[in-house]
Length: 120
Image (cartoon, rainbow, N blue to C red; front, side, top):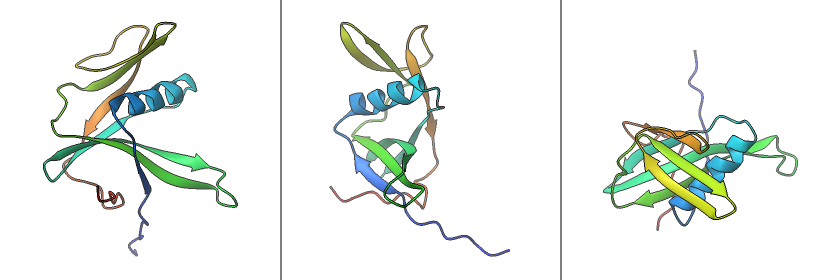
């Protein structure tokens, strides 16, 4: 069996955790399963979402990794998002809450080979 070579995904750094939370809320509202990948990159924690940017010109889809970096590792297993008429709240929690969108945080042992982060 031959080894399949995976090309790197396109990486896009978002400004903060709220931006990742907004993506979680949007995808969850469409009924799509969502999870956050977490891994260390040097002394920073990287949190991100893998998704497909569909119908990009003549391509079926472009794999994307939207991510946020933090100096500290967040304490919790879920990102929770509440959106209502008062605005949005994004929190890290050890559990889920009724009426909130959520995504589990999956902690990886190391950065996947197909994710190449841009230099900051």
